[in-house]
Image (cartoon, rainbow, N blue to C red; front, side, top):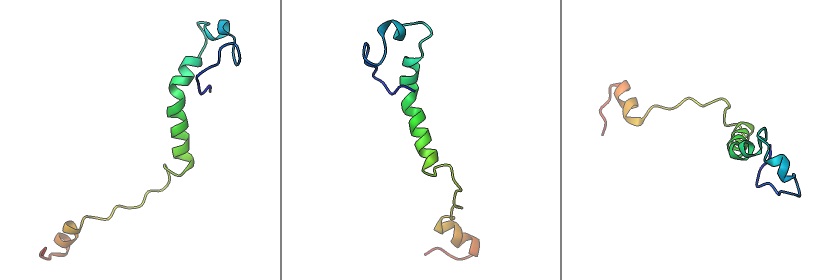
Length: 68
C-alpha cells in the first residue's frame, strides 16, 4: 500500500497515477486505518480478555450486606 503523498515524476509517472484503474488514492485513504488495525492486532489488542470484576456495590448486594 502506498502511504502517500505520492511524488509524481519521482515514484510514479503522472500518466500512470491518473489512470482510471489506479488505486493509489484509495490506498492512501484506507492506509492509516489498515496500519492502525494491524498494530492493534500485533500488540495484542484482540487477545484474551480478562473477566470484568463486578462493581463494589454489586458485590455487597450479592453477599446480602449493607453498603456503608
